[in-house]
Length: 182
Length: 412
Image 1 (cartoon, each protein chain N blue to C red):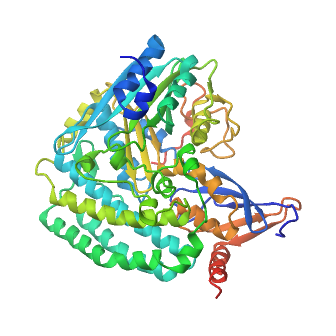
Image 2: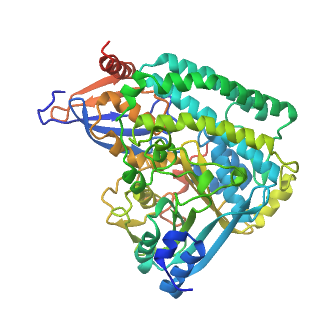
Image 3: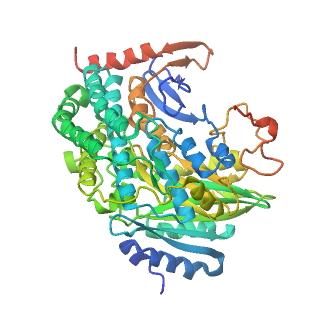
């Protein structure tokens, strides 16, 4: 199957999205999985969700090919400290208003090395991403290159910014930072 | 606060108000009465719920999720349990899917009526507020009859629901639908045809359709800007795939999109009718069968302990797309990590755009229009940057200002 962005725009077919990504990214995209969600009385497939991991160097390029299909509606970034790397999962939705059952959730995972934890910011492109980038910065210590407002978003003003609440290493919260209420 | 002197003042609204569902601070730059710019700072009551979940098993996290929000508590647990079901590969019985849909819609009815009433109250339309509150009681009674509670229903669980719809409860729900079909029209007419409503909400807090897309607005906020998005239609979960649902957008009803507070108001009021229709269809087609995938709790916990995977769920909560992502690791009892994206997290980003060029007296209405708080403007602090002098504006004064404008607009 060859990649036809014009056709994908028209059809919003998840298989075609996968074909485009596989053709253009080859080995740089891994763990690609298209999940079906069943429901209703007939237990038929209601919608599908795409998961994939991309190499950091090609992250921007991947998001830009989404734009050939549809403006990527940004939902949130989730993340986890996995030892040497921080994994960030960008949750996007494509074909938001294309029709019944057409919406496609796409989760793009990126491994960010802890010794240089910097991601390119998508803010200029998708301003709706601002809170999530600021949240990942304060919670997991990943910096975003190109994000204008790097202020704290959820942590209090007097927070010691060396402590990253979601890190699982020595930069994470120590016992004295956690108060058990019961 | 003289106009045209080139001086702007910073006015913070928030952060802590008694009635706020999600505490937030809006710093408004004002020139006279006009808002020039706005900066939003959330985080006043970040409770670290996601962090706390790392010390709990998925069943315990359900009760944590339920306490994220008092108004849409079921939306959050629904979203969380669906994410866990996705991660662990659990299928939900059909009857449970339908009951979940019914509870979600009952919650939407109460949330939208509450919001519409409070919006009227904000600009001094107290009779519409009281009418809304009287009407809302009916659905609260129904939720209590179904679940035993008015808020935090404790009804959803991983793999199903914990409460059944008995014939007795079904009758109560059908009575409610009939009640609203007769009574809600009064509120609809009073609120939408009223010249005061129109004068105070039209062209206030405008969010253009393009900005709604770019700033990733969700739910009634995005639909009010004419953007056809509704997860019940575009990504149908539970029983929604069996139902014929179309997103409610203002252009289908008034022929035009303003993207203002009035359009967001209209969308929510019309969605109450849509929800009633959905509940009725679900009751008519309620399938027989089990309520849970695994009713034995220790067995379920044991299964979840072995499960490995990441799950995602997005649902259409009353305020828009609510998304939860969960990671379960095999042989670990507790949730590895959990991310919650409540709809206001998305909608608050577009607040500064809505504030721009509005009057200070409209600020409560604009804040209210994305439905993040119930207008409990505790107090605000007016600071003059040059002299550093401070002046407290109380909730009462702010409300008076808002109401004074209504009187001025109506020439009374």
